[in-house]
Image (cartoon, rainbow, N blue to C red; front, side, top):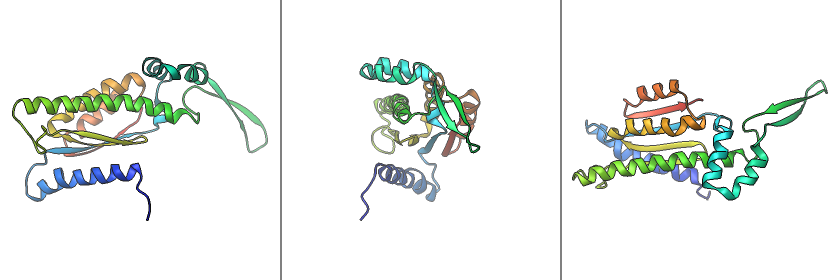
Length: 199
């Protein structure tokens, strides 16, 4: 039998959430209590600001700073052989390194950790008002991620603050533009949301 992978866990959890919080209420002619949020961060490895990445590593992971500085403090170059046999030098200012996925994951983790903290606080506020929600935990939202694919089940009333927070966190890191934020606000009105974020 095939061994389960982290991506299997994400898919299974989201599928179960879809069935419980969206499909079942709709089948009973009821309004879903949650929306599916899919954050497709397109070209994530090349879109993150190198300068902001180094600042984040200095702050959160100082032991990695010398290594990160050696790789990204200055623009690098890639030497490519063309089909006609000639060589050309291409400057590389962002990404393009075997270590870049690791550093991109550090940035993504920073964003998702704060988003989950926001969802936790919103659910706690509802509980304090006696609103137990669909899970007796204040309709606690959650976000799961595997590499650069992020999916979550979020209370409908939490969508707008979640997207605003995502913009606040992502834009300084080079992860999203104002145009894409406006697109997200339009999508957030639907119970099921898929957002493709292109810097």
